[in-house]
Length: 190
Image (cartoon, rainbow, N blue to C red):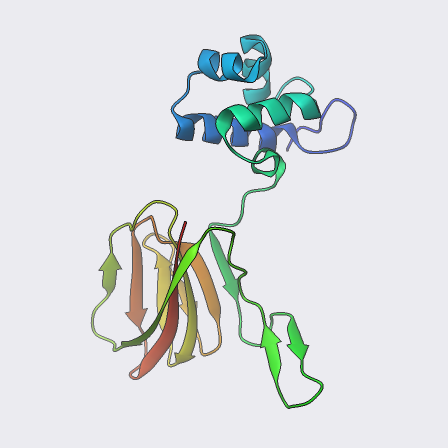
């Protein structure tokens, strides 16, 4: 069970600890170097990474600056590795002037680039993709047929109108389950 902060509420310390370890590893910094850059004691950082202690806003801001990440990267829950929205289940916003409804499947993060593809795939073989550049996320919306796609070790079966998002910087697969399968693939690069 996640540990709450010492005040009895707020963010779970486990989430902050995991984010600190993840970002420190990504930056290639030792505990000592990160503590020095943030102007905090190494023991304080060690306690935070062990999900102990009571992090202050100031400490987390200093760590965010030292890691070159926004404050939110240390306190927000991580986005799911795979996101699925089934056809007809997303929040649709209707038009007042036409029989038209738009469902936002994924907002583009700042600074991201997206490439859009129409994909036609037939049953018989699995398309195995090696990891793309770091930070790549793939988004799929099935048009016709049925598709199995996503991370190589946990693909998801999709039907027409279903939406799937997954990390493209890990091994992934795409396989048609019916003839005439089509989808729109959006590759997002950070």
